[in-house]
Image (cartoon, rainbow, N blue to C red):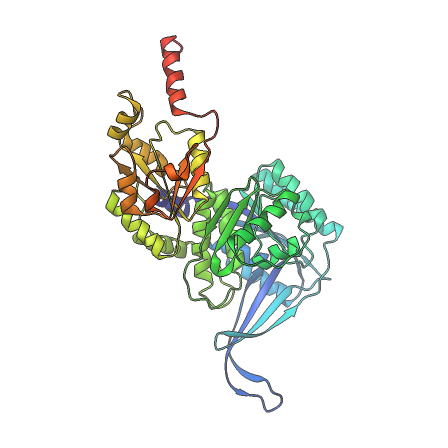
Length: 492
């Protein structure tokens, strides 16, 4: 079940992950105060300072997110031998982040961003930085450090590029070759409009503006526009996934093979989006490294982002907070292996009232095979939730004969529910799902095969009907026949 899988991930998997972060490390300093008057010296507000706070920024914030999820984190980059560098080391130690990959250099200045806030609103930002690309020695030292980690065994690598000089094409080319050699997943938070240097990464996490800069056009924040832009990038750059963060519209993932997933943002009051992208990067990598599907990873990443945008300033998500968020979501909607018609009707209305699209398809799904999986994944891409109307054992027997089903209705339901693309399964006793559809009234009805829309039973109960082709060479009946033939020939 989906909730059990996520609970196990949050409870047991996260604390055992070993992850490396490499990129531009910064200190974020926040000056808090209140504004009640204008300066007599110039037409500017006077901010009466009440508190000053320093936190990790840039690649440091990604590392902090991972560390507060209780992962073992190794951070690599460069910083200056200055007061801000001392502050940086202190912050990293407080989060128990391994700093053996950080080179403190006399000639460098530790990058620091100072944000001035009055009454919780950002008034100004001051940047302290002197930018220069990695020297040859610095690159060699970083690669040696990373190679040693790969040999010891790590689960993932984050590249956090803020365009400050660490993520050079030379370094990244060698990094991605190294990661592939050791079969380690990599995720990139990109910068700039030339993404060719990220070729070889597992996935990349641009926002809408960054994605538009890469394809050379301003993008409307609409599903079809974002998906097409992502596909354009994937055609020219060797990446497995693009994970586009879309502010209030959530996250969209597009894979190299053309599959797409959309996940709407959680409804939260937004105080500050600083560091929210770092949180998504951290969560997506941990989920993928921990073996979760992209669909589940999106749920968790959106939940985490919803927590951090409700905070003021750069804020790392904590594992305890995620557990609490997920507990709340479970109490709202708990997925089961099998729903009755009234439970499923309640669930469908809940989703539709939230403006989400519900997709329905039906079938026997006796002996689940690759053709079924491909068909269901394609169906799931048509909306936000996919539900299955499953023929009962009696219904299958009438349709397929007395020897069917091979697998019982309870077991077929459990197998389907275990698939990440399915949000619920409901049984129906009739030979067709017409009565079931008249109650559930989903948005989209999907059929597989050579149907004509006007011939599809139950079409009057939905907004639209989609016909998908079945994958050639896969059939439960053929599998059953092959088994019977082998048994007859004594080959079993």
